[in-house]
Amino acid sequence: MDYLFDSRGNCMSFLMTIEYPKYKQIVDAAYANKGGIEGQRDVLKASTAIRIRKRMIEDIIKGTVLPPVVIGAVISDQSFDDFLHLSEDQLVSWLVEHNDVISLIDGMQRTTALMAAEKEALNGLADYKLRVEVWLAKNVNHLIYRMLILNSGQVPWDIKRQLQTVFSTLLKKIRNDVPNITIFTQDDNKRRVAPAQYQASDILELYLVFGSRKEKIDIKEKLSDEFVRLDFIEVTSVDESSDLFCRALSLLGELDKCFGRYQNDQTEITGERFLNGKDIFGSQPARVGFIAATAQLMLGRPGSTQPKEITNAKWEEKNILMDKLIEKINQIELPQLKEFLALETLSEKLLIKKVSKVGDFEREFFKTAFYTMYEEIENLGTLEVCWNAY
Image 1: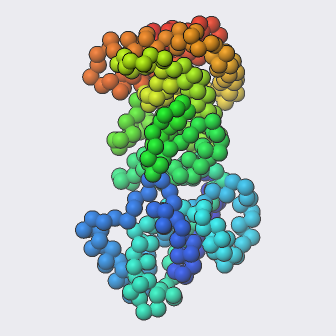
Image 2 (image 1 turned 60 degrees about the vertical axis):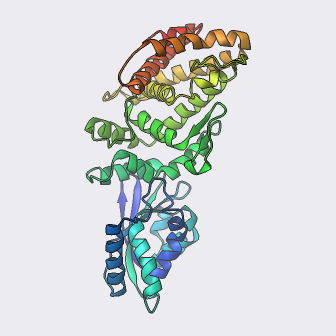
């Protein structure tokens, strides 16, 4: 069995040849779950793809050799040494036993063709062999870094696609590390009705914002800005970057909850956009602005480099002050909380400004507002100074 250690990404790559029946046991659960990775392409159904797959099925039955398929798993609680001493059969047995955590990174279409060929072949592909590349990583960040580096030159793969490929694992980490928030996936079909509830797609965008330290990112478009890509690769190559993002997200959730304590008692609909405290972070531009401001405090401004010790010291100081602010807000009586939030000022500021790109303006507005919050945190009487900062 061939293996290489990726010392830059702290990953282990194994390349082996196994029989199709064993491969099917390994990837069965992942394949049934669309690859087991968020953002993975489902089986292509376009006429061209169907024709290509039909030819591939015929070739497989005739014994063609397919390019290696790639699977991956995060082994945070195990040592790489545990796997170096395994034989190929033992590694295959481990993969079969742990097939619930396997992700099919690259090979969804080939696996579909293999399963179809199994039904048509006389011996059910019992003797068919294929090469499988197995990537083991200590945490999801190392796997993300590897995906960015290896796929950045391929046109069909933008950063959104690369992140989505490992997003399901990242989502599990966020859910474990940030228990004070609730994340809804697309399949949940749920909407935010209380503070600290967010859509998974919005969390993905916040992660991209955090990594790039920029608030203006259109996640729906192909991200061709090389500076964004390089900044993001740089931050995701750092071991603790996903941990830092979880800390920022946890802080967002706590702030969202203490803002959400205020509920307007008016029975009539006023038409105001920010009527209740939870409406502030009910806005994705506000969440983006907060995460961008926090990322710049944690990591420095985009493109800047500074000693890790200075960044950590600056962030720890602001984090302690933010915890005190949250405690202070939670002790404010509800009538005074309305005055503190200054929701009327916020609504007015966003209504007065007439711009062509409202989304970009609001992201910049909220980033400036929350950066001001950090700067004025020790003397913050109300949020009015934040809303007036832009």
